[in-house]
Image 1: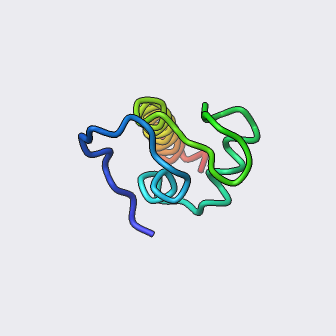
Image 2: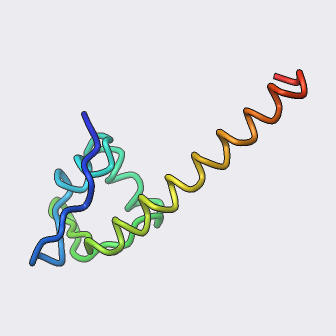
Length: 82
């Protein structure tokens, strides 16, 4: 699956499959993020709805963390630690 950017849209909420597509992960992974309380949602059961702004904020935080890990890895390699 290829991640997509959050396109501007008049819909404020998106469903689980669309959230998975945006994040580039499986629907099961998104469901687990919801279960763990890492991704806010509305509704229960088989049709949780996610605010587009919440998904965008989660993706930005995830991207920020990945960038920090890349920096730390590069520093460790330069120091010969990795």
